[in-house]
Structure formats: C-alpha cells, structure tokens
Length: 263
Length: 242
Image (cartoon, rainbow over all chains, first blue to last red; front, side):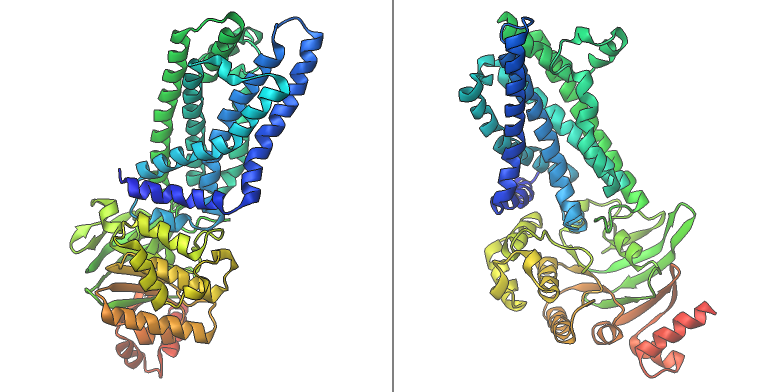
C-alpha cells in the first residue's frame, strides 16, 4: 500500500467538498431533515403509545444509526460516481494505483463525508428532542464500526455493478439500501417479521446491530456476543464485497467497459 | 522504452474489434495510428494501457509482457491524453496536477507542476476550475497531466481534436519540442494528417480492426502515388472499401 497515492486519491474528494459550500450543505441537509422528521413522528408515538417508555429515544437513535449506514454507503458510491460523471474514470484506472489502494482511499474518505453530514444531525437531536446517541456508551463505537463496514460493503457491491454494467447501474446505487431496510429491523423488533424472513434477516448484521441498540436502551444491558456477531457478519460481507469488486474489475477488462466510461 | 505488439486480437462477443495486430515502436520513436472511425484504434489503445484484456496475443514493453508484469510498475512510466477523457471539472488545474502527481509518485511535485505549467502556458488559469476553461485550455491541462510523471511511453488519442488551428499548432509544436528533448516513445492516434506527417516516424493504417498498410510517411505516399498523407489515407481506406 502506498499511502501517498491513497492520500492523493482522498485529496481529490477533499478538494471537491472543500471547494463547494452547496456540496457541504447538501451533505448536512438530508441527515438533519431525517432527524426532524423522525423526532416529531416518535414524539407523537410517545404521547399516544405505551409500547416503549422512551419512544423518542429509541426511534430517533435507530434513525440516526440507520442514516449513518445510509450515508456511509452513499458516500462511497458518490465518490465513485463522481469519477464517472466527470469522465475521469479512464485517467484513474490507468494511473499506477492498485485496486486495494482505490478501495482503501474510498473507504477512508467516505467517513469524512459521512461525518460532515451526521455530526450536525446528532448534535441537533440533543437539544431538540433530548436524545443523545452517546447514551449507548462504549458499545456505540462498536455499533458504528459494524454499520460503517456494512455501509462500505454495500458501496463496494454497487461500485462493482457500476464497473460491470456501466453508469446504467446508477439507479441501483440509490435503491440498494432501501431494499435491505425492511429486513434490517431498524425500527421494529425481529419478531414482527414472518418466521421465514427472520431466518434470512439474521444473516444481515443490521438485525443484530439494531436489536442490540434496543437491548441497551430498553434493558440497560450490553450483550457483547451480539455486538461481536454484528461485527463478524459485517466483516465477512466486506471481504465478499472486495472479492466481488476484484472480479468485476477483471470482468470489465475482458468486456472493455473500463474505457470511455462516462455519462 | 520499446513497445512490441505481438498478434493481439480482441473479440467482443461475435465482433472482432482488433485482429492479429503486430507491430513495434522503437525506443524514442513516434508511431502514428491512423484509420477511420470504428477501425479499432481506441480498443487497441485500451489494450496497450491495460484497460482491456486482449483475447489473444501479447504486449511487451522492453521485453516484459504487461499482462504478466507488475501493473503499477508498468503504468508509472506511461501516460495517456485524450480529449474524450477529462479531468475533474470542479477542481482547479493545480489541484488536478497535484492529485495526479501524487498518484504517479512524482518527486519534487511542486517543482514539476511549476515546470509543466510554464512549458504549457498554464499559469494564467492554474487556479481556475477545469470546468471553467475553454476547450483549448482544457486540452493543454490534459496534456500537462499526461506529462506530469515524465513518461517514457505516451499514448495520445486525437490530442488536437476540436482545437482551433492556433492552439492545435501550439500543442503540436510543444509535442515536437518535448520529444526532441526527452526520452519518450509515443503512440499517436489521430485524424489530423498534418499532425501525423509532422510528428510521426512511422505510420500504421488500420481498417476494420486490421493493419492494412504501414511505413514511413514518405514510403506510404510514394507507394500509393499520392501527393500527401491525406490523399494516401483516402486511397487506402476507399480501396479497401471496394
């Protein structure tokens, strides 16, 4: 790994963010809107439901964590799409950089984009709804790491599709997370799903992450086993994502889709 | 560096884009790749750059097959410019050169950026965003990017396409000056016959994925009994059509 090259690749996206205030505003806008929306919805449920003692806290924490996953995946995809939209793709792939350096640079830079959007949203929720995700304590870090790894994995799979099928795969980039959300049991316990779907859902790290989040907030207990399972599944998917990315790249070289890829 | 292309072919499903291409470019020489649209020039350049895997054959650089060598090592001594491949429009010229300088591992990068900016007259707009430049300015920036690592091998795909005669002449003059003062092997794909005549030591004519003729500019003109390369090109292309 050449860190100077990784930094060079990251710098391309840092300059892009730094040079455009509307771009920064766009990164902050959507997570903040989510917080407002889910904050008021959950406040309404608190007043009209007795299911959770702290409906606002649980739903809003879930919304923040889900948005963290969403933003990390979208950030990864967006950075890759930027290369296609700017018709810079060929320049990038003929530069002497290894695929693992591209993956590493996108993974590291995606966190910057994600945090630019998420930090204001997390801070807004504290005074506005009295909800702080920091109440989750140390396990929060483990939950975020698992979410981030899984978000990047989804990004890797979408970028593999972009390499394989070209820019027409772009729509899948936006839809990928919505496809998994119902199975992720983000806002409801896994028991809501039919038995057969529960079996499938358990293969996703999301179920373990959000079940554990609710466990910590409702029961004040930390199940490290559940946290470990979430991390392990996320990491396994990440490795699979890397393999798919490499296969797509080598497939694209055979099909000739790497050259002249652009809008 | 010497480039040797040995029987490379590329098939996309049932389409034979490139058929048994074989030629060599001697060290520090410039080869012109001519042919009508769709004759396989871009596919060939894609294979030379390692972006497309040949169905068969080999591409050797100084005797090393690029498909079996360390990709990054080979790519670090090559570069490419084409008006159809752009640099990020939202970044300034300087930022783009800095990023590509880092990706190519250029030492004393700031000095190199200053040098190339002076050579290609970029200083007036070096802090402007690439998207705000005229096509002539963008073209020079693209050329600067392709020379940032002082490549030993340069692939140019229609480097002066869509440029006005003045800028086109500037680019050609600079390329002429650069190759006389540096060790560089160039493959130039172009539709501009004057450009090819002026810059290339040898020419390859392609049609339907195959080489239909080759030689020096003078040899080709004499062989086909025409006045200049443009007429020669038209004769070869139309002759083969019949």
